[in-house]
Image (cartoon, rainbow, N blue to C red; front, side, top):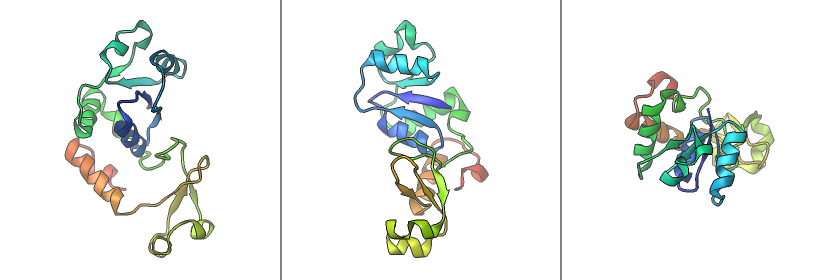
Length: 159
């Protein structure tokens, strides 16, 4: 699914990216530009701004009521479970939203800490910003947190 999140939903945008979704997020953007972008790119607008969803051009947007991340994820799950259950978890750059690509371990040796290089065999790289990703313990912790928040399929939820 493709989303654009308003400036009040940065953490949610990041988590949706972790879950494999294409989520645009800007710290600063005018409401009219945000609505126009969502419409032009056929994205679901996620917002906490009640006035924004009342705009005629903002049809198809989802008003998020909750303040806490877990509650926001539950709202999205109740709205549409597949918005949480993406098959492409941990496949997008958390910073720039680009899909990452697998890279050979040897290609990134100088770019990761020695401990990480010794203890991991699979790496992904963002082709846009160059960030390197690997599945460290924080991925397991995030997936456990997600399973505690929404009823995801345990088999698919493990990364």
